[in-house]
Length: 179
Image (cartoon, rainbow, N blue to C red; front, side, top):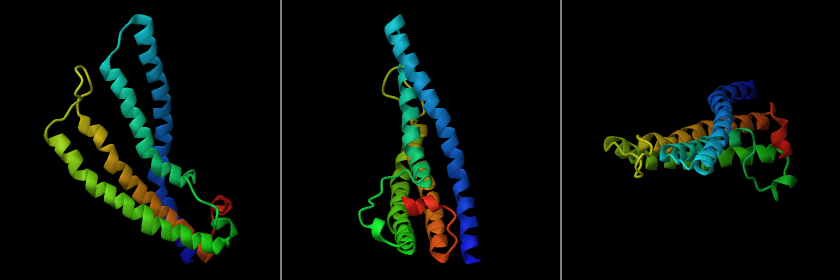
């Protein structure tokens, strides 16, 4: 029963990360269209808008920052399997749980607290792009850093719950054992 409760908790925690992941697929399409527009306008019509270049760059930053938690959820992150291939599923689950709670979660909390003042100061001074015609409200781009930290922390908790559920006997994601 405890394993089922942990699995339900993991599913609940993973929901916002999954929604963000789906939205990121739309952002990737916007990046492709935006970059095509930047190149076509620059070389086809000799026009270059700083706001358009910066918007594509901001979207790219959003995909990489917010995509970290989604990559973790989809088990697409970098993993060193040299030792874990020889471990039992139970041992892998314990190590996965400890890794999430002792490495990923503290990292996410650290990033959040370090970036919080950075974003608040940017907002307080009304920071905008240094380039004439660039994007206003640079603090919105900087706010992606603590947003990444929150999503990563949520996914780390969900992954720890899933790993612990696997250890307790309710493995609902067999692909984690194969990784």
